[in-house]
Length: 279
Image 1 (cartoon, rainbow, N blue to C red):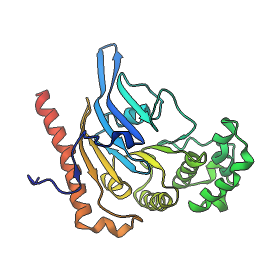
Image 2: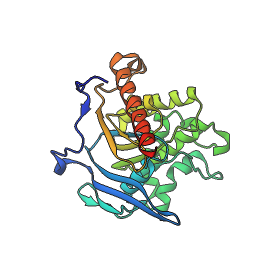
Image 3: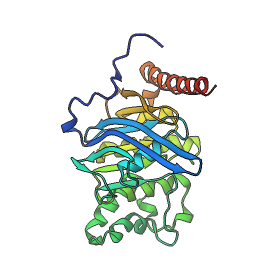
């Protein structure tokens, strides 16, 4: 790698405007007690996310990406440190959060439309007030004509589109997506990336996105955080220097490919360092 830092590589852990951040992760650690001793899943995570930013976390399997996002979402509590969303400590899941997981987890006996509206029913909100938003989301994702279908009648990509609509139906200020496209074939995954990029131009929410695909992360995101192997730390913070709307041809740009190469080399260097330390 060049000794001169490119303009898109940001300094680590320098929250100069922390009071203006929507998501603020402050020196967060996560340790699990096991029969064989403590496991340090996340170590010294420290970063901020501006409102409206799409931020991706990439890194090797088992590096703590899902654990970190689960803590931001209130699904787990940190062992140390503090997480603030909208200036308030996160201690449990919130109604203004949305979640999309690797498995779409749709209810098989409900229609597409009813699956999208399901969080509204569980939160005991007036369903009729959200039908218009459900229609808008289903039209934006190309699913309106399938609104009466059951999940078993949909392809894998279509089921994930339903899950994304469901994650957005309550108009969340923060949406967390944990590898939502990892089980899809390459062509479907490319289509989903384009769909999500286009949808984001319409909804413009704050998002945390986990993926193992470097190109997917760079294509979709405003920022990419690179994590190393467990016990994990954030080792690079990249501000993706491409305007929205995102176009597929952006992936042929030399700067895009330079960023992807940098991320790949950073993850590989972390593997080598860990192996050398273990030896």
